[in-house]
Length: 258
Image (cartoon, rainbow, N blue to C red; front, side):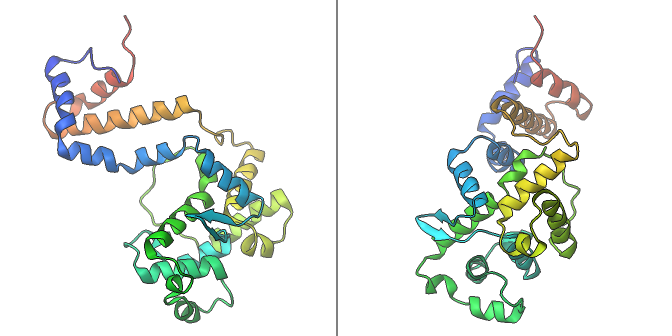
């Protein structure tokens, strides 16, 4: 960020954002910044991802757990798990259900039976709900860590769907790379592996945007997002007019030439 070429009143307003509670809240809770931060090298998560690809059980909070598979994830979507749909805060019942599917799998696919069997499952395996929540969040992070290889794109506001079309599309691509059977890919292959193979499929078909982002590239993206948040707040506070927004953004994100 470069502020020295800005008018003094704008520089002062930017400095005052350090004491602006609304801006600080937005900055601390910005999902795009969180996503960019997740792109950074994380040796612990990289190890978990490798273990998942190798077909090993994972350990979270000193507890061994099964890996997510494409079938488990799609089934949890059908069961309207908030961990998949993000439509509501998860309850203890949701935690029970997720852990049960994570450990037991889809079984015979009877939705009512799955709900009934999952009731109180967390307590049954002697784990408290706070620890269980950490296990679930980490399992999801590792499952989708390969997507960090893909460029970040702006969402179109539509809901994510993990239906039959999604899982068969994923399986078709993974099969093209690995030759594994659809049944194996759905029910036995980790979702981490499936996502990595999905990335390899795209690479094999000429997509050169899929690669591990460098620390420098991540920092630049974080800087640009922070500048977007700053400029938006300056407009709201009427420090700068809307029509100057683009110019101010370009100044603070581009190193001034001497």
